[in-house]
Image 1 (tube, rainbow, N blue to C red):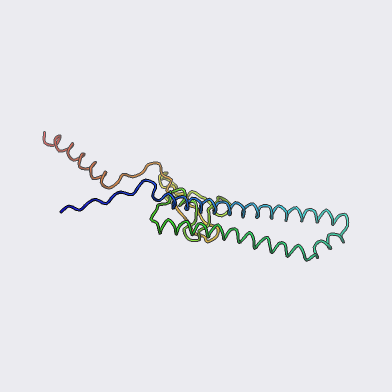
Image 2: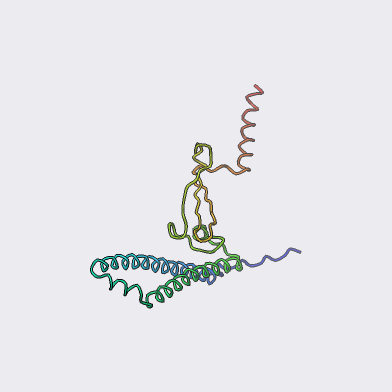
Length: 193
């Protein structure tokens, strides 16, 4: 009365799910890059308009005042800010969908993919744009170099993710017990003689 073994799944049975997860990740990256480019070009254009305004002030004060009083520029700025926020929200939605698909299908995300976004708000973590990196060592006087921890702090929600940066990893508990057992065996013959 032996149970028949269930046939194993074929090698590529979840390939459509993995490709869907990859697509969602690429789409989130794409929209995040567009959001970053728009925000950087907006800052650049704002700095250019302020410098051009100061040049015009020197030449003729009235032309600068006319530029500032036009109603077309504030409406355009509102449209740009709303589209930029939509793009950042769209990338967060895609990351949320990616996490949902991986949870529902029980497929694991790779470590670099999991480290690329915030667990709390699903923002893609781009260094110096959406997160800050710092290496902390909470030991006294930073005496223990193996206690270094890389801390990524999300600028959107303030969540911190910690990643150990130690090169010397501690042994697993089972390995430590084996070493203790071997050490006691080696000592016992020398003590007996």
